[in-house]
Image 1 (cartoon, helix red, strand yellow):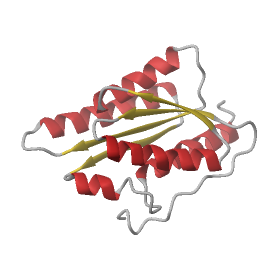
Image 2 (tube, one colour):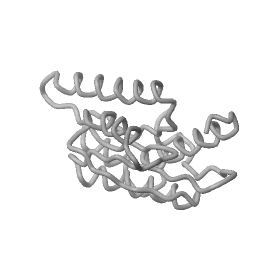
Image 3 (tube, helix red, strand yellow):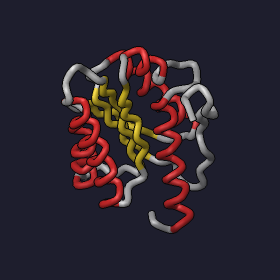
Image 4 (cartoon, helix red, strand yellow):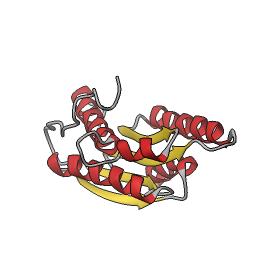
Length: 160
């Protein structure tokens, strides 16, 4: 399903206490990632969640930062990862995309995290802008909604 065909993201209804979420951003493409953050923030606010935003150097640092958060003193119910990798002329894109996504999957499964993945891997900056705009089709909003759906599932399963 393409972005334009997908249903618009909306905040899920959650029973219980408002979740506290860490939004981790890799703002190499600042305009894109700011748009993703704005979409995520809209969904989190609509759901009544509280959240912190933390910037990291790049896409490869997203998963490691969530791992640090798991070890840290601050407690989060969910995580949202936001960033953008645009294909260039070398195969560096392939390595960064593969390893960043593998890290995100690994940390999610290893620690049983409620995590929404908003790391864009695109061929052009225009594709990234199309996916981070405020027209409703925003991958940051989708990632935030996904993290909250995971919180709802974890609560229902008694995992938290």
